[in-house]
Image (tube, rainbow, N blue to C red):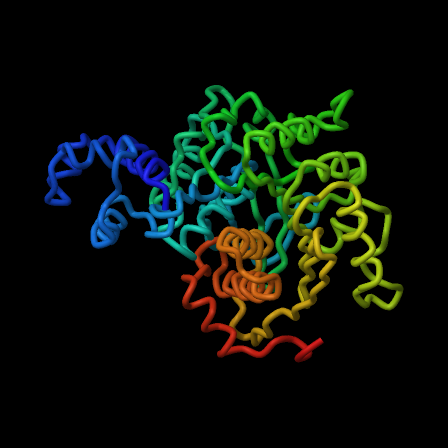
Amino acid sequence: MAATNIGDTLARLRKDRGMTQKELAEKLNVSDKTVSKWEKGQSYPDVTIFPLLSSIFGVSIDYLMLNKKGITVAGNMIADVVKSIVEFPKVGMLTHINDISLSVGGCAPNTAIDLARIDPRLPVNVCGMVGTDENGRFILSTLQKHGINVDRVCALPNTPTSFCDVMSMPSGERTFFHKKGTNAEFSPAHIDIKGLNCDIFHIGYILLLDKFDAPDPEYGTVMARFLKKVQQSGIKTSIDVVSDNSADYGKAIAPALAYCDYVIINEIECCNIWGLDAYDDAGNLNRQNIRLAMEKAVEAGVRNKVIVHSKTVSFLLDAASGEFIEVPSLKIPPEEIKGSVGAGDAFCAGCLYGLYNHFPSKRILEFASAAAACNLFAANSIDGMKSRDEIFEMENKYERIGGKI
């Protein structure tokens, strides 16, 4: 426990909350000179003080003592306008809208809010771009309600916040009409790498961030160049991808792998990078191809872990040890399922939480798959997420698909 590191953390937290040393001292019943010594690294708080500091700043004791900086989630920020309809009409025909609801969508809001719901004391920041319109204000207010720092979200005037008109039918089928809006303008220039101050930086979705997906003559893509800079600053990097049947996965994603510590994507996305089929002709999961695709990702430069999820099973390949693990998904009764929007982001949040807290590899997949299952209990992308302890309890309540693999 280094006094200097603790002092730096205390000073940063105090200043972030607009508190003076005297104000903090009064809350702790110590002198402002004592607080000053802590922040200068000349001494550090007594162990009995840490629970009070944890409560005042809303962070964990581990964060205070170990100087853990949390997770930053960057990327797509979308307002989902969900319209419930009886059926999708034929061209030229009319259908009735029975209900309209607004919810957040995209990697940055979904994953960040899921992390905050899993552990409210985990420091979570977001980077992204919204417009100065009603949808932008809605996204920001939703993030702030969950205690997420939005200081690094840019607001762009005269461009609409990215949104989806989601046509939802009683059968559960959905059709999406997407407006790129501000997401198409979001670029590395909008992220101050020196000011990130986090342990893990996660960004998504590749294939849906035009400025990051753009070609780069030296690195292949702008995303690859950007991730290298993030790694050079001492921050671990992580990516997610959106599924797009029309995209060139190899061209858009492969260059970034060389500068990733973690890759968290689904089975189709992983296989498409290398031109492999994730399923055989009978529609069964092709485990051999999935493992081969993950191994190719490691060969391409992924430093730590490649994690792949599907509806029925998730996989993890450790780049250092070569350890390969499979964990079946939880079996949720169909009558309890209310939706699946954002399940991939929920899985990703579970993985990031496990990685951040140094869970064993198998435990990461168990926790992430249970977090993804939480998402099934709500119609939107975030309301189903539960706390860390509740997620652990889900494994006692539900069996896993097919038992042990």
